[in-house]
Image 1: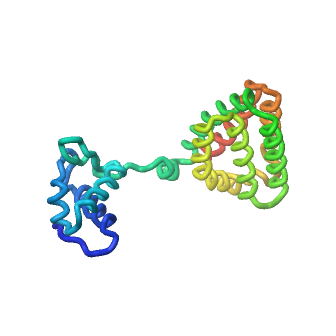
Image 2: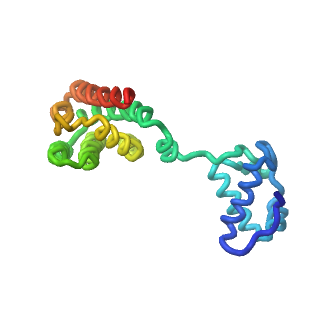
Image 3: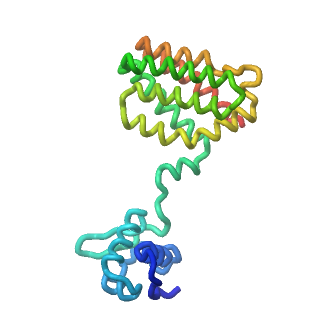
Length: 230
């Protein structure tokens, strides 16, 4: 594939794509030093600033690495996947295992750090889950369940844990809806899991870190077993 001149239009995107194609097609293997900025600009028919922006974009994608005084080198032939993309591609059970580890620790911290406002939010989230459980919509039930767990994580007052849970939630949601639908978990028990969730909320509000982590472990382990068996 010749590295020919570009047509007018979003030139940075075109330049980045042309360079990316040269890398992913094997024309520039890992370790290759790219031609200089001036040479690339002349070959592509764009300005040096366009080449600079295109290189910056590919460096951000994990394909190129500028090295001070040495030039720009190819360090990968496939772009690095960001965290949300990797979560979307992962098996639900694998995501759930990691989510459980994060959330159990968050529950312990929530028991120690929660405020009166957090206690009120937890009680409200539990009631919202019960209300959703009273309806026929499994998606609404799962959303209310996830919202309750998010409230527990928020009560830990650790922004990193909150961000992690926020990343996990979309990757889990559809899998949990499918699980409820497939196994008919609410057919005989519309308030599926209410006892464990009530114990979790009560333990956090009481400041019982061991009780909170135990209640959460029982609930999450049961769901993980169903995901694995499914």
